[in-house]
Length: 95
Image: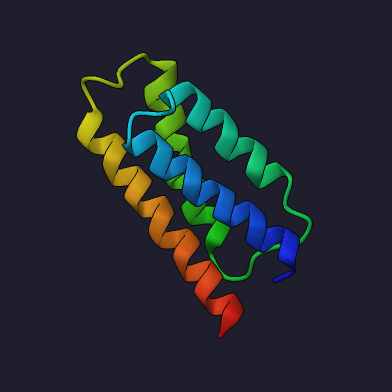
């Protein structure tokens, strides 16, 4: 994994943490996650993208339906899933 990809995934982790701390809205989080994925310059191995779209897609759906407060637990579960996915990708890249 090249340094650019590592920085982007680190940025994604900081977005997730900022949302959890109440510093980002769900709208900004979903947009930032999408932009980060689009900015990757290399493919990430394994089933990263399939899992990413499950977690991110559900966040986008909750946002589109304006159901964040009703689905707060699900939002947090999807954020945790993204964190695990990113940590696993970064860990496999560094050996």
